[in-house]
Amino acid sequence: MPIGTVVPRILLANPDEIFARSLESILSSAGYSVLWAPTALSALEQEHRARPDAAIIAMELADEGGGLALCRTLRQERGLSPSTPIFLTQPSAATRPQRIEALRAGADELWGQPMDPEEFSLRLAAQLRAKSEADRAREEGLLDARSRLWNDRGLLRRAEELLAATIRDRSAISVAVVDIDGDALRSDWGVGDRVAKGLHRWARLSDAVGRIGTAQFGVVAPRTGRSGCARLGERLLNGIELTFGASCSWLRVGFVAFEDASAAPAAAELMGCAALAVLEGAPSAKDVRVRCWPV
Figure 1 (tube, one colour):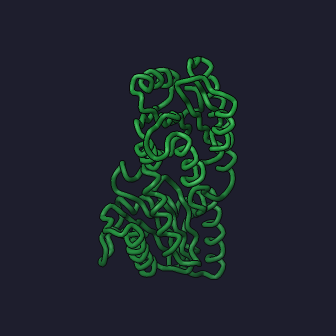
Figure 2: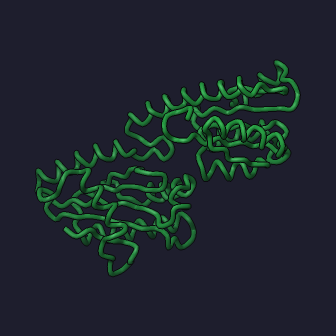
Figure 3: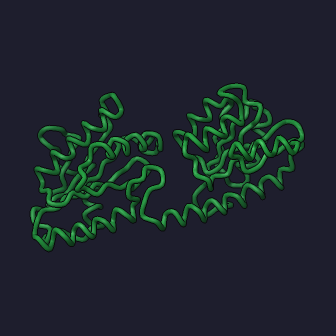
């Protein structure tokens, strides 16, 4: 495994199936998971679902404006992080003007043919090491770069602060987890982004909202008891459905509530109880998708 313990995902956008399968074999043997897309449109769909760690894009893609346009879209419109390497490839040797054009489009390198597989793999590994270090640095921050909500560390810290404040005035506190029933949707970054958009709009200003997974979110609601948190869960589900423009039967909310915060456990345990409530909690009378952890 070249990078850490998580298998890096490589988006390979190339219309030439023979070349793509050959490169996929090389990358797979090096420990990467390859997402092959024969068109620019399918590459955009793959990126939307999988959030790749690197992209290898053929200049000769025929749709959506070609490889250069796809590179620009991924960098500028899809918000692919600056640390995510993008390699462009073409069937002929690359000239200096072509390399300059590729760099201006947001690519890290332009590779022409013939390609040295060993050098290509080593350069990709080096780029992914740099990305891993940049991602680690971002994770040590407190915000989720993709949604601009708190990340898991930031939400936990904010939950500890709100718990301390509610203990001081002996008021209520609740923690809710918004989750998804179904592994495919639960691991889809695009779905998670849309849920985040709904939470941005419909969560209360007094609540702390954070992204704790691909499509999993936590909400810390100070001075909110059991009935208030049940209503909050129903409101968030309705708001997210408005964001999607359709019924989302796969959405779930689990929560735990204490009328007196001084009786509550630590913030991390509160978050864990809310996550368990998604599966094992008692359903709300108004919406069975909202479940409460017994206390």
